[in-house]
Length: 310
Image 1 (cartoon, rainbow, N blue to C red):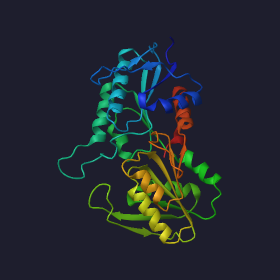
Image 2 (cartoon, one colour):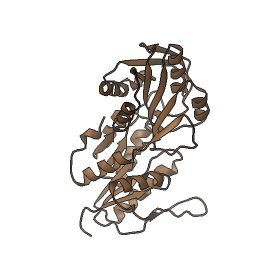
Image 3 (cartoon, rainbow, N blue to C red):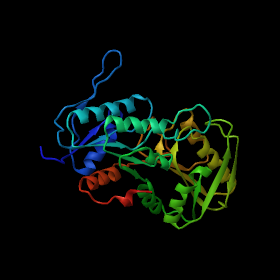
Image 4 (tube, one colour):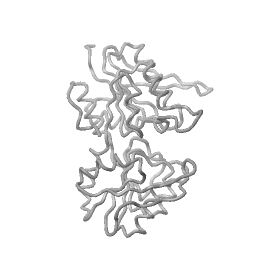
């Protein structure tokens, strides 16, 4: 095998996405397996030679932690099988919310994950809409931090909304929302929330005018949906004509689906970086596979990928 042939492989829980990435890239998905022992231990294995190849391993690391461990074992197996370059493709980077010590005696999970990936043997990481941009600095290998802007903006234009205003559901997401506001050439409003503990909002205040507007709310992930649904309710109460949330990663745990379906949200648009646990009439999925396929091909051809960044 000549040096540099592209191979795309999938972790067990991200095969649905890897299939679409490979199809968009015009490449057949590589053959791999992950047999399990009776006690639950598993052993990923490549079922074809990868010697001298660019091996792209697609796996989002949403819970359970087995998804992260499987990715690490696949990286180790690729290194031991003499792959030329090993590139981890993590559309959703789990543990990204643990990017700093925000109180005493806690771990920095994102840094630990970065260290484990590096020790396992990656040469590069491709991910999308990290919860905190500074996680890129946790790595000593190139990190390609893609943005769902490339997916969401054309869809927003196609919707024919009359009077758009971009909103951030919290102060921390202002930078991300501002990118969308610049692309759409519109105003930005911000929700300020206070909470006493994780996933529980005590109060929310709206900064900006939404009366008569079609609100496009932007966030990197939606977990229990408490923040976004509360923000939508506040905006509708302030006279918004419609409220739609554009969110990259559909974590959707706990009461998320029930909250979305009973909220004032008109629609929630997400990518397929994480598989939906169930369908909902209010949730629309846009595939990120074409974006990742394009970046994979450009990396292999040593071309610029700056248009896919935030």
